[in-house]
Length: 411
Ligand code: ADP
Ligand code: MG
Image 1 (cartoon, rainbow, N blue to C red):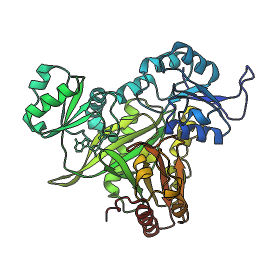
Image 2: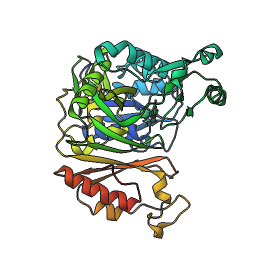
Image 3: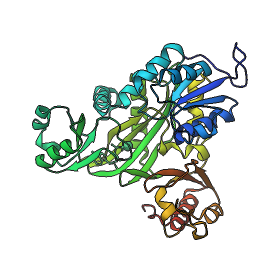
Image 4: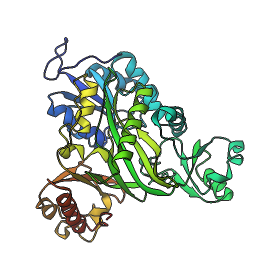
């Protein structure tokens, strides 16, 4: 069903509160729920986990598997329109929902983003318009394709086509023997082998596209990953070359247009050194708000989650304006076990990081996801840091990183 305007604060013809739904109850769903509720909508979450971060705070929480017919029927019965918060929602479930309710992004867009083989084909197809290519790659789905892999793709990274995130489902390989062993270790599921690129840096772009095709772009994020997981995002003048940032924005808009995408889309890029200077390579896309876009919550006049609500509800979509230089620090579960964790509250779940000291610094905004236990590598929350100037935001971030025992910012 196509999107129509769904104004907040009213009731449906059946007398029901106007409710927006989300498939998935993780932290991204939680922050969508928070943005929707702030604007007066009721919310419904479908997630089998009774303790899911979004389910815990939503008006309605349907606790069934994503492909459960009854669960999907309940969600449709409750909701005026439905979005998704992670790309591994089975796309047939979105097809079912989309037959009866507006769903954004659509099942077909999510299907492209959830399969690296389709995603890279989309990037290649769009390259004449987007102006940006993916890294050289080969799809590996059969022994014959494995044997035919060109030598120039090594050393490379073998990535499962589906279900990978935060560097999971990836193996670095240098030789054909390692490649064959790695594919066997991944049970020969469909994969892509990507050439290992000499990364100068990474960036990402978030756009929001309405059902009318109007697209707005957020400022481009500079990202630093540790062990394949996003660690830091920096967004301020001077963080990135403005020409490259503008190219990344234009490319992202072109990729969204080509899919006739509706909703919030994030595209990740690599910055690589070439003979002609630094160039862009498109890495992957996420059909939803993204960890690298969390800075928008405190540094922009519209957050990526509000943009998700606006696109889903068919509301106006003015260009978001960044009002403060921003640095986002991801808070992984490791911090709950770090030497700087606050010792008085020792429990088997680990101990709290020194929040009081962190929050004493000006412009620190803590976002915790309500996860009941910390594990190394688990995303527990993030900290947005804002300040009037670039020098001040970097200074505060440096203090925060020291307090948390994390590596310093790049120079
Ligand atoms: P995920 O779905 O886990 O985010 P990515 O493909 O984005 O998977 O890989 C995670 C990180 O691994 C990237 O942000 C980058 O730091 C590194 N990486 C991935 N592919 C390559 C590549 N071809 N060359 C160099 N580094 C890469
Ligand atoms: Mg990634």
